[in-house]
Image 1 (tube, helix red, strand yellow):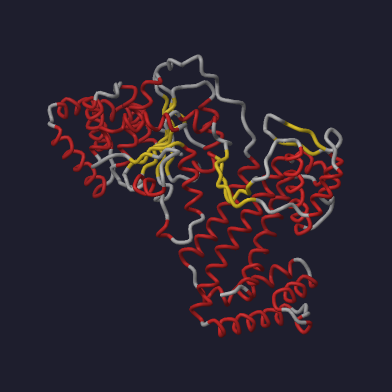
Image 2: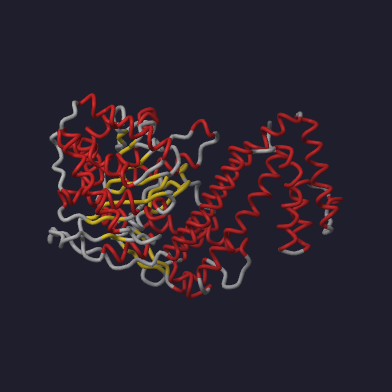
Length: 514
């Protein structure tokens, strides 16, 4: 990101103060008219320092008239930094945070692209929503508000507002829900355009590695293999209880029993699935989990969500260490206050750096999954899928050896006559099987079935992969001791999951009841 032009920002602030005297004499109707004119100007001609100065003058006057927010020059300066520089701006006092955040959200909201005003929790969301009310009026209505108790219909309405206020966890769970919807018409959010973060240190840094997730269905009963393995493990010898998590950590002896030392991704995935079942059984044995333990369908960390926004800006009240952490995690410039912030010394400095290398791998894999799923959801071409699936499956099997080609074809089509290791013969056999299925169902019905099973299998395989990934994260030390570096393991498991996805889609397309 280019350095902030300090002279340009200061010109904007001084110019806004000159314009403020003109705005101050305006009636409420004239103020709303001025805001509509600003929105039209932004749509027609874009932004300029003069535009930003007039926007801040109008917004500052609206907040002052609302009587809920004291607007200092430092708050205006911070808003100008966010508007002109697109970065994190520091203010002198915590009381300036609400005004600066509101002014920046108003500036971005004039473009009507769906601005997310991100807070630390529901209490902060309520307070920010109240303080933003005068500016929401200039944008033509109320700001949207997301709380834990907000239902689906209310959420959909909240996202139609130019500015929507909510905590990072509310935006994250809605993002995850949208990522699993089956049609674009069901989406709630309007994408991840602009995020204006109030109390940036608390949200961007303190909550960076916190995980928001969607629960899935209850886990199936553990396999006999898992029950047998759990019966052999002893507390203290094979695993240690960590009540604060709550959780357990496996020792080296348990690691040797639960996952193979040298195995391909298929065997390792199966071993990790069993190990997860063993983990649940041990947690239940120790009284740290009940019988209704659910799987996780999707998850994302706060930093993973916020780094996906097209524009990310925020306001900081100057906690020590925040600037370095913002630059390290998000690659954003941090504009310090023009004078020393009046820190609240009851608040600690930002926590020690957290190693996010593991999460970055998960973020990359999640992006691939979301891209593939969106392609199926919004641009599915049944004819193209019918033609490409056999080739994709055979390429995946070929990478694992000739025996896999024979095994894959036999599992999908059946019959000893299909036990061939020839890739071209295998592709032809799969195409003929799909053609027969399509003829039996009808072309249109077949395409609808294929789209439906593609979405379902993608979701199931991602949830299964995510379960393995989080298990690897929880027990990384034991896994690393027996298997080596974790990054190659994660990548091998992801590639295996993608290959299995194609195979399962073919299997359901050929055999699922219509």
